[in-house]
Image (cartoon, rainbow, N blue to C red; front, side, top):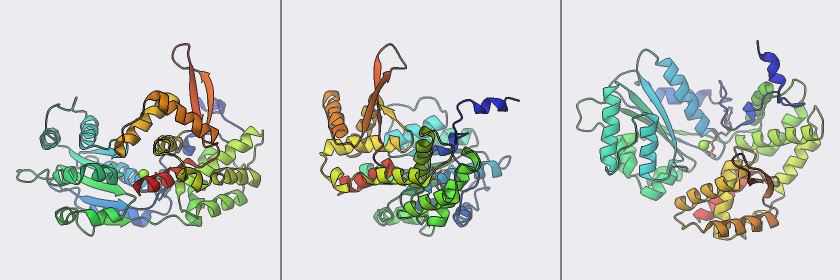
Length: 390
Ligand SMILES: Nc1ncnc2c1ncn2[C@@H]1O[C@H](COP(=O)(O)OP(=O)(O)OP(=O)(O)O)[C@@H](O)[C@H]1O
Ligand SMILES: [Mg+2]
């Protein structure tokens, strides 16, 4: 009985921070029963040891593509326990934008030791296949944000993965789910890939409406907050605001920042003014302000936004690493650390980010932490991505 310890770290409103994190996965997805059963339909043969299944999921930002695939993977593995051995690997191609990085992630997920160096991608794929075969295992592979990989390395890897069992005796090594915001991507697929994916295996998620968004934040608030600390009009207000984009992440972000605001004012209840202030802040950055940034600044901001969607702050060392990942994605040579740092200062002067210094976790030095209080990072990221793709 250590339940009494729950009070440690509990705030006036929040009793459990976890559901406020974007990575937290609810047991039941709100309003996605139809899509889950569509997926199940596409995977109806998965019990058969010789079969492989395929699906493509598209939908706008925050429509729940990632969480849908993870929920499905989790449920499927449990459902097939004792019937078919399946490993689930979820690779985000934005964080691993090259063919070799994706393959490395797959290899790591299978725990097959270090991926062999000096082998071609085709050879690594065959070694992944042999690994699966020898363990009588099937891989359910999700390539999330696959458009980033395709833009960089074309369709080569997808094509190879789809043909993994070709001219082999045993089939059924790998099932594939491809995820992309961009439904135009499908139009770019070559006919050979479309026919292998199955033209009808496509799920297109719609943005959430107000009702769905309210349910999504209520589901989290029920677990995260003291009962009665958030009233109906608060949910309603957030629902209306987020329904402009239909982005569940924005709704969660607004709930989270309203709670923080109320708690830091010492209240045990969220007021409409907390939401209004969160909204005002998230709207206080004019799009034109982002348009006016240099390319390097946009790339830096994009890296920051992607992390700050998920956590409340980031240190400058991590921020620089993320900047490098973004540079790689957009095939741009990263600038030196000094230049990076100068840009950070300029971004701070423009009110796009805030920084604070704190004792470092390692050694005796000080670390600088970056936060973004004037803008919703998820929104800004989308804006910058669209801008950079132009
Ligand atoms: N139906 C749902 N029920 C509960 N939570 C949801 C639902 N849909 C989305 N969420 C939550 O909203 C957030 C955003 O969802 P998710 O990351 O899956 O969106 P996405 O479509 O993958 O967005 P992106 O295009 O930016 O990758 C996550 O924290 C997720 O858990
Ligand atoms: Mg996603």
